[in-house]
Length: 346
Image 1 (tube, rainbow, N blue to C red):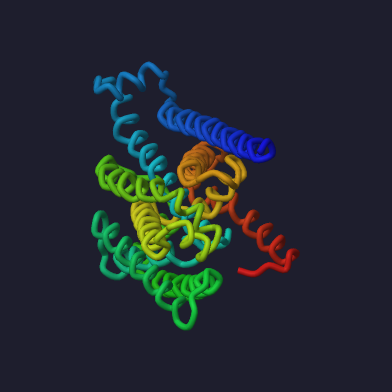
Image 2 (image 1 turned 90 degrees about the vertical axis):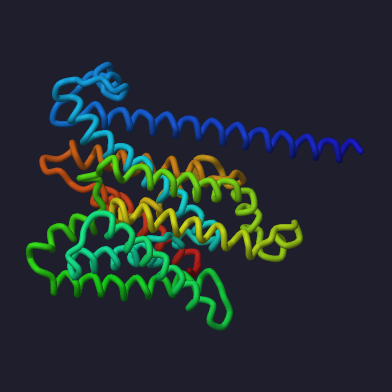
């Protein structure tokens, strides 16, 4: 009897420790995100004091500052924040469902699907603005459906989906290269800016729809986070614990696809944010706690921090996707080397 009580107390104590760690890490990530958001509003060609930024945000007209902060910096910051959260949550969801760190939307072809749609609009149809975003979302959803359908031929497995996705991504990247080679030289710079993943030219008109998508589908991912952790135990264990696995998996995948496709449609494919956010969040909060929201905060930190580095760390300003690509590529190589040493496979 005493041994059972001791075991129960140990379980409760472990739960409290995990809960405290999750809350502490999440709070610190949120604080760092806030610091980066404020920094993006303060710094630029002209540095404004904090009180000026607050006055502009409250609606006061301040000569010079109102345009720089309200029209240029605020949309850029909000876009980076929302897109980073979307990328982080979507990447973590895919990696958890498929139980593989390689199962990131920008590795398995979903981001490339959105990119192809955008490139056709920009280079072939000569379109821009909202139409490009809508087509990018639709093409991302179609490619995700195609990858899932092909991976279900025969018997479905996460490794099979990843391999199919990598193959589809290679094909789509070839299509993008073909479109760039055949395009008018006047259209190519705009296409490359979009493909590099950039916060340049963001407008407040982009924010409401992005916020709605994030609130709706991000909430679904967070609410189903507990079931997502149970799915990691395996199909049979999840069913035994009362989880409707097919429904939960469908809702999570659809939500993640909408998040990644819409975020990509706004800023372009910001490299490796979805790939890095989940593993970093898991290292910070631990393996026993849901990490979807912390992963979203890590994604926001990566995008906002990379934007600051791209703007001010070099003589030339680089798009945010270039900086995240530099950060993510070594991690991908290290991950592949470790998996090879362990004899693992995708």
